[in-house]
Image (cartoon, rainbow, N blue to C red; front, side, top):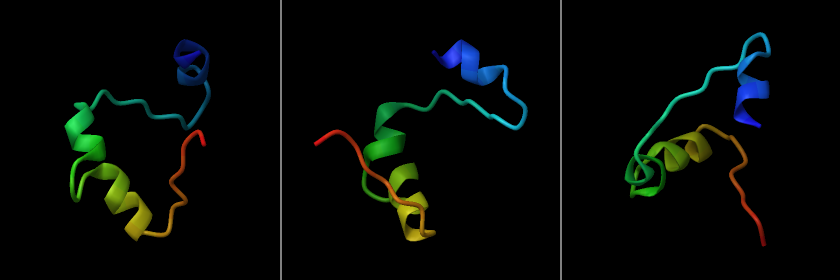
Length: 42
């Protein structure tokens, strides 16, 4: 659960509007451009 993960050292949680994550040039696109692997359920 999120509450369990939030207690771990070094974990940062943020609430972002869905459009900010998935929209064109959103957070996920920017992370992918930086070399992070972005994926989801098949």
